[in-house]
Amino acid sequence: MQDYHINIFYSEEDEGYIADVPDLKFCSAFGETPEEALEEMLKAKEIWIEAAKANGKPIPSPHYRPVIYQVA
Image (cartoon, rainbow, N blue to C red; front, top):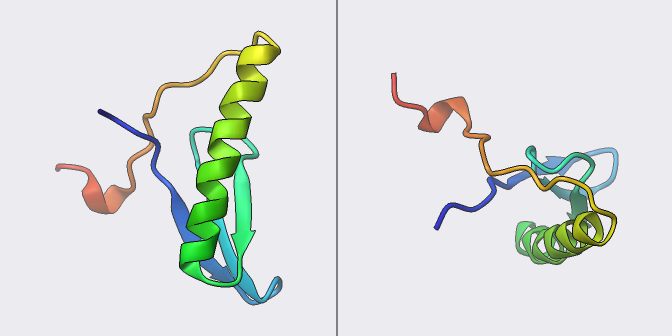
């Protein structure tokens, strides 16, 4: 099963970790640890998809792959 790529990075400005899904516009979450950011992102992703379905909005397929994982 193909799933969405999740980025997790530390934000000095927010003094915590930010997680986002590049394929789902504006879908992001915050946590004090990388694990907490990931946990919150998994919840946010489900809510994002539910809201899109409820409002008849398209749900993009997972396409984003960081350059590090792309085959030359």
